[in-house]
Length: 299
Length: 305
Ligand SMILES: Nc1nc2c(ncn2[C@@H]2O[C@H](COP(=O)(O)OP(=O)(O)OP(=O)(O)O)[C@@H](O)[C@H]2O)c(=O)[nH]1
Ligand SMILES: Nc1nc2c(ncn2[C@@H]2O[C@H](COP(=O)(O)OP(=O)(O)OP(=O)(O)O)[C@@H](O)[C@H]2O)c(=O)[nH]1
Ligand SMILES: [Mg+2]
Ligand SMILES: [Mg+2]
Image 1 (spheres, chains in turn brown, blue):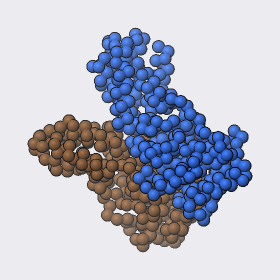
Image 2: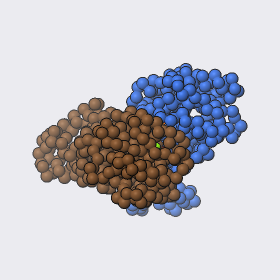
Image 3: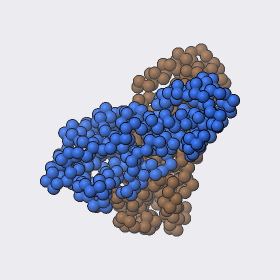
Image 4: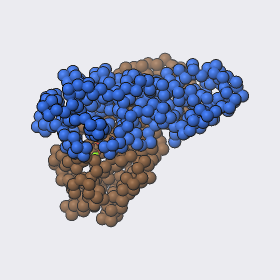
């Protein structure tokens, strides 16, 4: 709340009756954006856009500038296919719909999968999970516990087995049992590790042997507190697996996840979900305006 | 995406060329470049400002050597400044006590449990008797994870899967260590957010009751601007003794290291560089400074000159 008052009261003083934006306002805006991990390049771009709009629209009151700011930032998200989705829904013509979940270590992949299965199960969908992280200590136990908690079956071959064959079996079970959704967990991996990135491509290929247009979604999970490295993560995981959606986790903390704005600016990947806690209910569909608003209102 | 600092400064050098001394006028745009480079490396925005103000002070009036370009000289000054900011006294961990208790803290997924295994492995190799205590009673399979790691490194793990009181488990673990002659106890805890008051109170309680000889704050080196908030709050509640920087085997610049050092002034004691149990190392401030700045051999070039 404090930041909000500060920022918007300064904004008020600085724009009253002017047709250009005061340098103080822009500095302030720069600080808000950069401290949210938006990154310099994208911040400069946003500021340029705001300046251009202000020059065009001439007279501006504080409230108009407020609106412009939010619109321009949210605009960067829209240009890149981030449509606000209303609810947890699956396309009707893909059955089972297959989601492959990828990301670096510890970002919240397995937890997000647990939460997603809870949401879709609540909606009446039949969900199956694939425990294809066979590497990290107790990873299979972790997803099995999630399966129990949520009440969905987990396909597993135990630790240190071939992840691709787990994925294959999970998808097969999905087809055999006419499930609506199959979600495949994978081990966390840094994008700099070539072998591990190749393994993801292999998992994809194996799934495609069974359902040619699957996985229908490759979801990259990003930790909301990650800084500029998230750009490179988006870039490298896209290269290896054609990422089609993003989930941003841990937004219940003080980190703001601003890298997403920059990522949206450079990659055409929509943000679909945000994680706001460790409990199974604590996953939300992404809403652009609410996300942008949080830059100015939280801490 | 990230131009290295030297490349950026090369651009700025043009405006500096032909000047014998670094002056207010010729340094301004270069300082701005340095600040941007730091922010792009995830150094906190405010910290980057403070650091570059300090650098400017140090740079002004310095004679530019004939053999070195002003840009290179500046890069050297920046490198020195960052190194000294992150360095200071290289502190080891305190393992005196009977038993010595090491408390591990940090955000979710930062690498605490993995580091706990690695530290046990390292201490064991130094010939010490170690007991691991599993106090993460929340995360699914957290206890199993620690047990697997303990097994890998051949160190016993104390756990009470049915007990929902972390403090009790820790105290029982320490009692067990005394009974079995283990000289070091490492307590793995659940990940928690700085804003989660209840969870912060839990770890504060652990700290107060166990009186650990060493409390470590484990942080993901990919963390962005928020690193300062988290480090500040954890330090206020725990007054931790040192920092562990994880996942440095990736390509992150790791500016969080500088941010944290600037806001809490606690030494970085270890770095984690992989998922394997031997991927642990001591912290080297000069290497970290080079990493943040994205410099290859600029420094050594300048040293030679
Ligand atoms: N506060 C908070 N914690 C989260 C959220 N999502 C995940 N976590 C926590 O983050 C930690 C790591 O989550 P995991 O789901 O195990 O992450 P992962 O990406 O599967 O990790 P690896 O498989 O080891 O790479 C756990 O302690 C989770 O409880 C979130 O939205 N908010
Ligand atoms: N590449 C790499 N991965 C690491 C490193 N340290 C930990 N990890 C991985 O990061 C993920 C999270 O590590 P954990 O040790 O479970 O983290 P944690 O802090 O105990 O997590 P919570 O207990 O859920 O809060 C796992 O996939 C680890 O294998 C490291 O230095 N490098
Ligand atoms: Mg996982
Ligand atoms: Mg843990």
